[in-house]
Image (cartoon, rainbow, N blue to C red; front, side, top):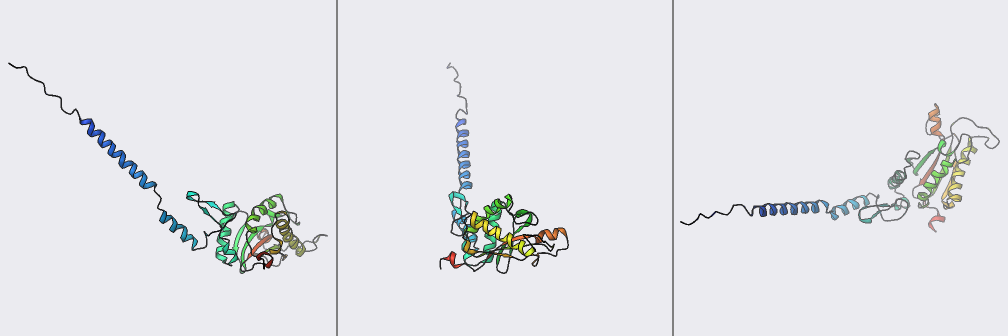
Length: 241
């Protein structure tokens, strides 16, 4: 009588099936990661070109350069200024002020002749004088690089409220408003080195209010300096003609 032989235990290679499934899952996982991380360059280029058509991203260099994906740069479309494109000028100015964190200090608006930067008196001067505050110098320093790249004529206007002034230095608001405009221009040209030939300084006293001088708040709005970048006007000293 032959002894009974034991059958080998079943399932000895089942771990190979589990291992194969795990490897397959890992492969699928890494394929998905690669697919999600891959940049669609054609769509990205189309996105950039759509902004270029609006005059927001164009070739150039200057204070508005910002880094993009892969080391590309978004550059200021200063052509908008030389071409007199007021909408483009406005958008570029807003972009610069936002980048510099200056939108709380400088208001930007459309004008018939171009784009205006409105700076309140309290930021630039003490009441009744035309001495630039330290904070005013810092603000103008940050604006200087942007204004330096603009070839257009720049008009700096001084405005006051309707309260009369009568001092030895300033017999009326005319003199005060003119002196304030001149002080801003002189700082930009003498301290920051901007081209004097493209600047004009004007003073209007109380005669061009932004709002009626009926309240203290309104009078504060009227005491201001406006830096107006004129469209389609490039001084010959700047253009080289």
